[in-house]
Image (cartoon, rainbow, N blue to C red):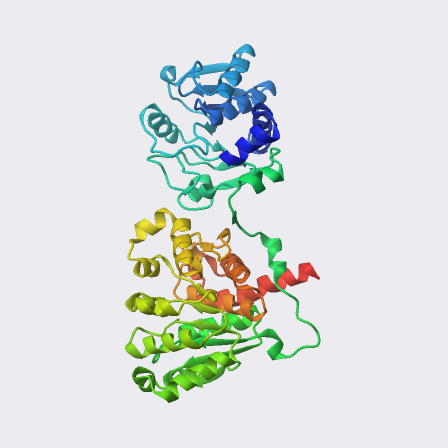
Length: 501
């Protein structure tokens, strides 16, 4: 955003104060929807351009008759050029301005946070730490942040020592990564993105390729032609489940069907046959012998090759376990598959146990690790990974030329073309055993419909989250089960197709 702002001002020629006035106006318009005439409003402003936005917004409220006090973090005599200009205008109008050093804390109804913007790159300290800590203890009815809550890193969502929680965040131009990733997402709460006049060319020249989806994007799923059969909609092979551990295979297969796959085959051990046929009679069953897999017989290799040749897409790993036969199974699938593979769960754990298996990685692989699995794959700690999700996913994807779906409270997807998807759907009710297995099935279902791997990975994550949002309304925060996400995905897809029609 700093580069977009600079390009717009210096190359396009739109004056900084014009953008600032538009930003202040957009902020005030959102704030007025939520405040009352009798409210006591404080605007606490730093001495950079975010503080200048805050002073400008305070002036607009003042001119409309609102009761507002402007608290200047570092006084009104030093700061950016725009900040000094806005303070001068406020003084000329006779507004109520006070230096923080002279401020005696009390109570306000509405707090405007304009201390720091997107430029914060180091921990908050000194007077600014005192200001944010002090303001955090006021507890007004509404706290509204200008662009981003002060103390949140716009690049990562990290809290830089301390931060001020907002009820409303009005951000300018484009949403910031820091308001989409935790903990910044929690500090930002309701985010409104305001158009303040950045030309599209500024994004094209200076922007970075991060994106998210919105509800209309579900229409990207293709319709089903009238003249078709089950083979028209793709064949998915689910390589999953160990002895008496068929639940993961069931959830993946069910979700693939619910998302649109025409034919799903489960490749598993004999012990899972009857339970899986009972739970999902629509699935085709193919059985292999773990003893043959462990010794790597020619018959086993030929069987795996045959299954891979049959499939248009493969799910590899859920519930496989980590025994030697499972390692050989994963290896043979990676060797023989020439179709997209969604590699998850024990498939990833086996990769971490036997790193040489990465030698079989090709560009058609989508991995879907949670942070624990990613830590094992990369020999990093969960904390290291969580501090920069995007960089962690991007680094691994680029190393092997694959797609990395890194699952967390906010999932990020590093795509092969260099773009990065940041998910905006989903909720904590989905934090249940089996949720990841339904995601692999949804991804596979989209692949079966002919959607390219990059698009399927990002859209599948989004639909999975929407399914969780949908089913939470029915089952509640605590009662949602993983298998209900498959039904939720079917409802989301149906909704999207209905809007398209």
